[in-house]
Length: 136
Image 1 (tube, rainbow, N blue to C red):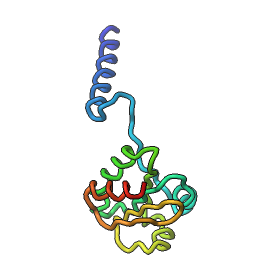
Image 2 (cartoon, rainbow, N blue to C red; image 1 turned 90 degrees about the horizontal axis):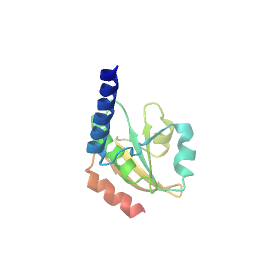
Image 3 (cartoon, helix red, strand yellow; image 1 turned 180 degrees about the horizontal axis):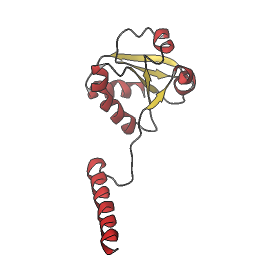
Image 4 (cartoon, rainbow, N blue to C red; image 1 turned 180 degrees about the vertical axis):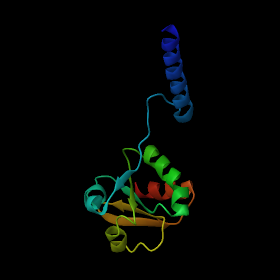
């Protein structure tokens, strides 16, 4: 019995230390991008009170997978200032067609329901940061 209690405490301590090491904080989980569909695009993007970064991507796309961790980091770093969304172009063809998406990854920044910037390709994080800062 004592060993089980000790082991449970040790596991909890290790989990806390790993979380603290990886995030710098305990209990503070960063935001993740919001996965949206064609049906949710109007509500989540065009009607948003915040600027929105939309990542148009597909599972089979290697550059999309390369930029995905950067998009996740931006969701956490800009939480409360920019909404970050991901839209799978294979499952949701209407929205990419409407916006003339021909290459992926394409990232678009929307503000007040309008496209104010777009980026094509897996670009460095600093490039995205500078574009987001310009949109704020």
